[in-house]
Length: 264
Ligand SMILES: [Zn+2]
Image 1 (tube, rainbow, N blue to C red):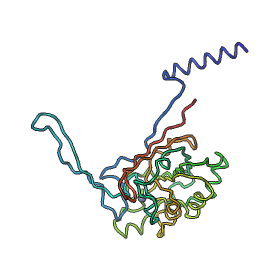
Image 2: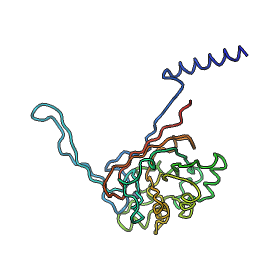
Image 3: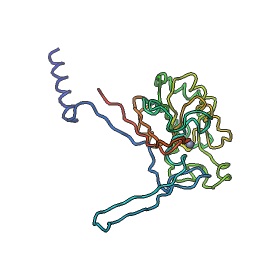
Image 4: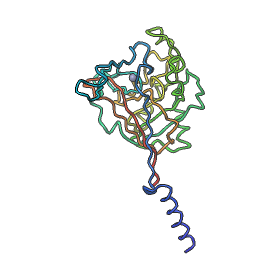
């Protein structure tokens, strides 16, 4: 007994040595692609622009830089506010903060999807995940990993096409969430938001965007083009997803980060 206690004390001391701030380790992961003119945008959207207003040493001798940016709401890592596909529902400035911050579950389907761009994530996939990891907890943020973020920013591989305009939209090919599963998630589980590492919560070949409609008509926002989901555990991550607060906006650039579970 005494020997066990001594061993435990020594173990705790070693942990403290390894991590001098205490045995609580926290690590933040950036789930955001850097926004630039290289960012992948929808085929009908103009690319991100950053124009220089001033950059250099001023007459008074100090350095100064300032730029003006121009962007579509739905380019790069961004949020879809409910009003994007559901009239009268929350615009980006109206989404309650508690919807954007919370415990996440990560459904990693990348191996199963294996680059198949017409893949649809179904209720069966979610039930299979729950079998190994337990039921999706109340008020979870659901993050879907297809593995397509590895193609970023190669538009042709990421979107399935580098064509622009309506021809580009018709040729889109990337995985997404089956519309019926979006409804099932909204009705059978208590979820705050759904995120995915592709350009849209609906798969590329969708033409009626029913996964969007089914989530957003229930005031559930979507996070799109998210990155680095391979660095998160299936459960235990805590997500903060704060978009630019545009009055009446249907979406906007999103900075989304996650804290990995700390060992307490
Ligand atoms: Zn969007």
